[in-house]
Image 1 (cartoon, rainbow, N blue to C red):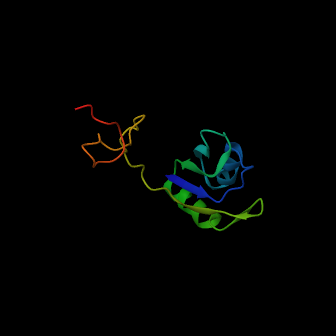
Image 2: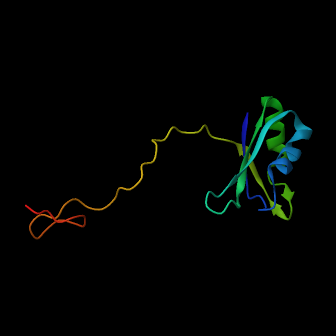
Length: 109
């Protein structure tokens, strides 16, 4: 079972997150999501538990719990949607035609 945990303190690390859920059953993974540019926590993470019953109990008991002075939100994670890969660049209008059109480059024709 995949569990989403939000409103975490920026000080919470992967191992801390694992420790919150271990009393409820086997935690197969615990991951705090970090900002790509700064490396700083984004204040949420995911926990994977092998037993669905244990996961549901953990959600029921940990949702709205106070951790490091913050009330956390714990819920079953939605399945990840397949998204198309990002491409670099893009944007800008088409070419400019006569006196109309948007940004982009001017046509030489």
